[in-house]
Length: 501
Image (tube, rainbow, N blue to C red; front, top):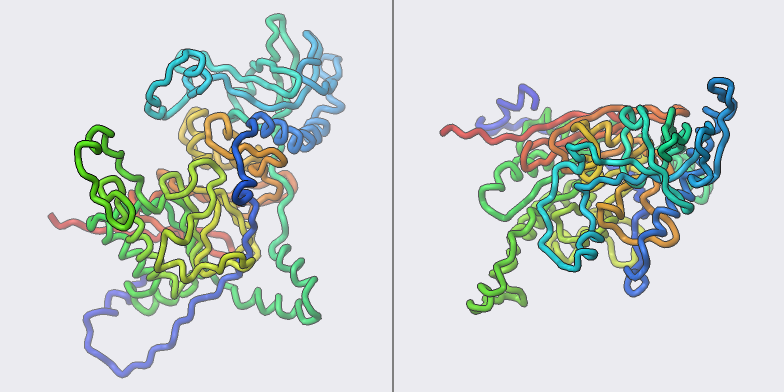
């Protein structure tokens, strides 16, 4: 905060007139890329195998185009590199390249088929930090609709790969039947829309003065910022409220002096990126519940359900909503469906805040916009994409190291927001289209519930630039991320409670 904020409190009243500080408005145009069908149109009877074929059919042309450009006229030791259409068309000793889907065969990776084959059901093992085998038993496969081919070679150690990403590999099959690769290509970043592209397209359908309205629309939003926070993990206990209250008072301009209030007034929107509510405690054993008489209130068993976290979170949002619009993403521990894409948390969970949500059936977003996870939208003309952290946390288990930004960059270059779904990440069994395929490159890509704040800017082959933001867990770090909507630069505001004991 500014230095002059120290003298803003505990001073006698004065007749000084203060200017009214108005919050900068936000241009908010959400996409509904991850909405699922409603009611009986959404079912889980279909197989998951179609997802891989849909992903391969969508991304194979893109990766083949890059491979043809790089290897089309390449000769090695007098032998020209040729393209083969299927992995089973690879012939021993012939230099060629082929495109397909990566599959990581890792013994430590959970596999439900193993339990079924053993004909017994056991408790789920504790989650592993990494799936990587210390004995080197992991294998990398390339597969398509025809079959599977084992990959070996130096590029596998130089490039990050996980199950479900689409690549083109160039090399030759050796005497052992393995495909020894020399080089590989990934789809890389897709086309990136221009700023205000969707808004200008909408204006073209408007009346004659639409362009002047769009110009005014842009000018009013210069200097605005978007706040991102994740991992509030509200558990309803009194001990977790002080830092949360500091955050709430900062965003409403009540915990700072006039100089900082001017900066806070530039925050046009708050994005809550998952894990807002702490995961519930394990239910009591069945025998223990049968021995004691349940204590029910308003239709639920108070011994098995604690409404305090939801009530506290509802109060938090209801305090902010008169002042600032909120975009709410669900997370792994929030009351939403477990499989990706998680659908919006129902407004009925928040009796005070739901008054700010849009009416059922309305196409316009409300002041409280409960959205899917993953999610994308245009804010002040920029394409923003993000999720609650599950896809990145799952990729982390496949690869060595802890470089979260590298993993985020690879997710974009693979053009798939959740490549490990459905192998080790629960998801909906899509039949017509893999909604995790990234068709347009975002300007900002954020991931919530990460161990620490990190940010970087990456570039694509045709001039795309993407701001990567790893949003830390607020419960552990007390950090709020501010994104400048003019420059896409970021800064951190840290809230900390000091203990004098």
